[in-house]
Image (cartoon, rainbow, N blue to C red; front, side, top):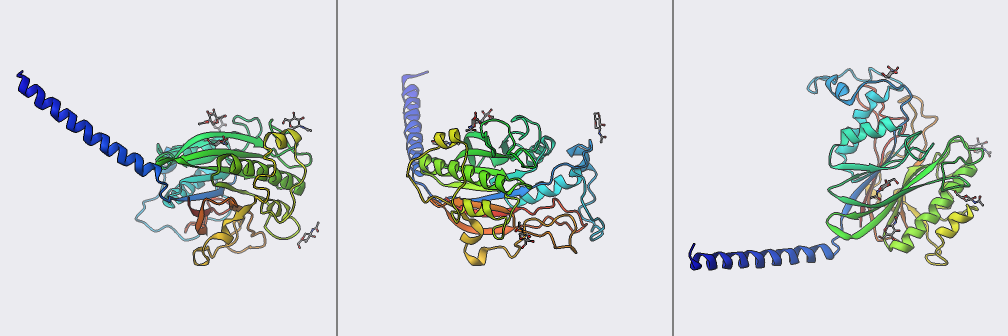
Length: 353
Ligand SMILES: *[C@@H]1O[C@H](CO)[C@@H](O)[C@H](O)[C@H]1NC(C)=O
Ligand SMILES: *[C@@H]1O[C@H](CO)[C@@H](O)[C@H](O)[C@H]1NC(C)=O
Ligand SMILES: *[C@@H]1O[C@H](CO)[C@@H](O)[C@H](O)[C@H]1NC(C)=O
Ligand SMILES: *[C@@H]1O[C@H](CO)[C@@H](O)[C@H](O)[C@H]1NC(C)=O
Ligand SMILES: *[C@@H]1O[C@H](CO)[C@@H](O)[C@H](O)[C@H]1NC(C)=O
């Protein structure tokens, strides 16, 4: 090998390095300038797996009808097993191109089924509410790995003893809130926090304590991270009327109620962001981008009985902002064949951060 070829090669390597260094600097410049990014969030109460069977996801897919043949309209009615509902849930959420998807009532099988259906670009966080591991329902947060990176996550209980699996006195069930901190894959400096929850169905006092704990933690995150904070969840109570205490507390219309002192001390931020509250996406999105559907709970008696229909599932953004609301939508759980993917409908919100 001649010295001449050697130096030609060396020169080419140098040029190669310089070009790459320049490209790298450019891409770093791009990643530090915070280009607004639009993200779609969803929250969906799945209805727990109340008729468990041992049908695998692969078996369900193999049993699907020919996609080119029309099914009989509204041939089915009432609640179908999770094994029949899960493909509707995943198809709906995946087709909406969400990046952060909170779910409620998910038993461990439902979490692992969705993880299987969502595929390799998705991961999730959350624990079973009855033991902090896998027993009972999860309020999991699924996230798209190509869009966001998980920084940290934890769970607290919506009770008098929030740091251990526990039930509020008089509540129907153990209740939790899953907290996760994310950054954008395109810009590590842009971070945000999501809290996903499911308040109690029987105790209005539990719901008010739950909302107070969540607001305290959300405000702490807003102060500590100086970044947007979002709350997704099933409040098991509407935004108006005599059981709207949780909604009123989280939106700042009513004062919070007393919470566990250890929790209050751990997440104490003094008087910083003292007027912090959560803003309801339905009221924040430009009016022409607000869904016509209002109810998020329908039950399984569609389409005739609307007596139980209510808006009890919400997506909120923190009043410290750092985000804008672009659109809000309540999806449908009903398929042509009459299958309801859940007794709730999914809620979607588009946010630019
Ligand atoms: C599912 O499989 C388990 C283990 O084989 C069995 O104990 C259970 O009875 C099965 N359940 C149903 C509904 O078939
Ligand atoms: C989220 O990240 C910020 C900044 O890294 C940190 O201060 C905060 O404690 C994190 N929140 C959680 C839920 O871990
Ligand atoms: C999320 O929480 C789980 C359970 O506590 C923990 O094992 C895991 O390391 C956490 N992930 C991150 C990225 O913090
Ligand atoms: C607050 O919660 C912690 C753990 O969850 C518990 O040890 C403590 O006793 C609670 N404080 C009160 C006053 O109940
Ligand atoms: C709450 O409001 C509903 C509907 O207006 C009413 O039927 C019910 O009696 C009220 N309950 C209480 C405890 O006031």
